[in-house]
Length: 250
Image 1 (spheres, rainbow, N blue to C red):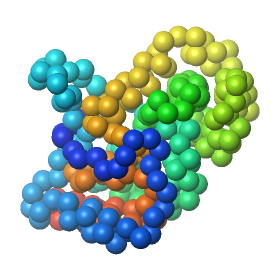
Image 2 (cartoon, rainbow, N blue to C red; image 1 turned 30 degrees about the vertical axis):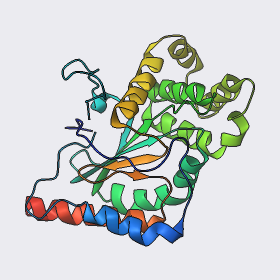
Image 3 (cartoon, rainbow, N blue to C red; image 1 turned 90 degrees about the horizontal axis):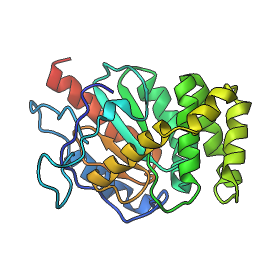
């Protein structure tokens, strides 16, 4: 995802896996998000993600190149960019990927209106998340299509590995089942490079003040936390696309 850096944002919600689809607050949440839109004619920030860490002097914080992390889907020149931070063990994250994501992908990503970065975040709440995240990274290292298949299995079979005493057995077998080269995958898992990428994503989430998963940064807007109704996501993304067209004169 080109051009992503970080600016200070306010994150909503509490620590841990964020709450589910709460329609009682949908109207006010939607209005809050839409009210955070940039004024007409004011450029949308080219980023939505800060480098400043509380208590750390400017210039001494860890610099993280967001473009090298996670997995991007959609047109890199799309007018709207979203960064999703999810924990593979988070049940609400799984619900998003099973119910909301397919709609957003079809309507906004496939149509070239939105580029979406999935960035795995180990919240620390679930002991088996690091294995799942690192295993997915090693599949991604081989081939994006293999990653997407493995990514889907990790969500759909979350209950099989989330509380397993030996999660690596499931994560490895699922990588093999989607067609990964297991010699290459095992080699990746034995090195530090896959862990460094996950740690960098988690460090970024800490810098941003992310306190719950999933958290979505629609670049230039207030972040969205938790599983909001599909229609809320659609309204916000449609508004962002409209604003981008207004700003660029498209």
